[in-house]
Image 1 (cartoon, one colour):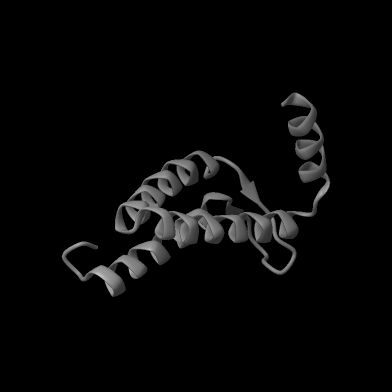
Image 2 (cartoon, rainbow, N blue to C red):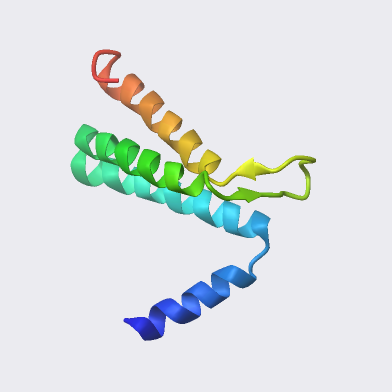
Length: 98
C-alpha cells in the first residue's frame, strides 16, 4: 500500500497548481456522478456532506493561480461542486428534497 501512495504524493506535489486544481475538480465530478449512479439521491446527499467536510479542511490552504491576481482557498473547488449537487438534486428530485 505504501509503495503506491508515496510515489503518488510525490507526483502530485510536482504538478503545477492549475493542473492539480483541474485534477481535483475532475475527480470531484466523477465522484458526484458515481455516487448518484450507485446510490441515487442518497448518494448526492452523501456527496454534499463529504465535499463540505473536505472543503472546510482544504480552506486552510490558499493557492495562487496564474490568471488571478489574488489567492483563493482550495476548498472553493469542492464547494462549487456541492452547489452543483444541490442543483442536480433540485432538478431531478424536486425542491422539497433539495
